[in-house]
Length: 198
Image (cartoon, rainbow, N blue to C red; front, side):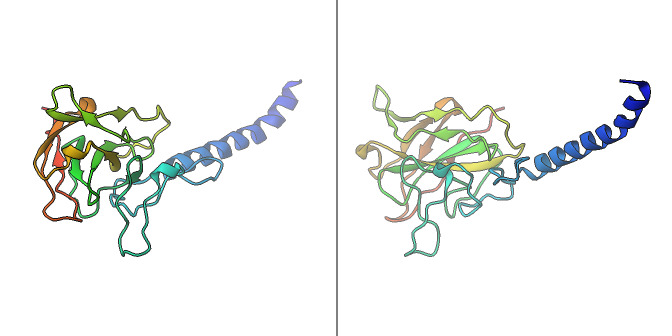
């Protein structure tokens, strides 16, 4: 190609590159995908179980048409936000509380809303029968939104763990908490938060 041809092509090529960059920046800023598909990102202001679901079916909020609010998730289900009625904190990476459903623990983790760290569907007693061990699943490597939001996982525990007495729960390498019983049947228990790291 001659210099004249290259100079003639330079303007349209630069304009095309600038337009592609603008689309990419807009998609990243809005948490959406460049292809215009549904976004799995959520802002940190979306901290309730009714916040928009991600593309992952396991992150869909549970819904029970016979009640006004969202139903508590079943073991193995995850939802964005905090358990219904729970008070959040930005001083802890994780916490746990009893679900309104007997034998189900609600585990809350904080991190990217599009790549959350989740709890495994089932937990068991440690070898000494002193604490319930909850396994944690590492988040997807990305790309992830740069927010800090809660995600709630429902975990099935051994039947004798939910017996109306405080129980120690180990949340993988995030720490351990003492989960207190529910105030009444059919209610969620208070969230016990892992102490913040010094």
